[in-house]
Image (tube, rainbow, N blue to C red; front, side, top):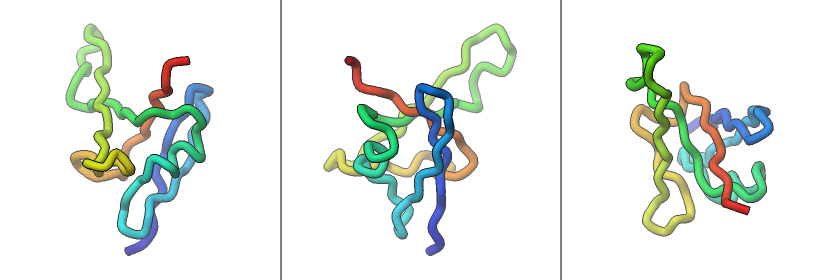
Length: 89
């Protein structure tokens, strides 16, 4: 399997490319290496908020049962820009 890179946007608005594992997994450790104090990821729900009168909604990327890696979202990893959700200070 070829390696894929996903786009992840931090609180500063800068987008960083994070490489998935050879099996297509994004680990929490990889996210935390790129973004200190990160908790999880979210991405825009493209099926909501098209009429400009409703706010855009987001979908949270879930963890695996061991909370060590993220579960691949519906439709796959590619074609989305993910945003970091940070731990409260």
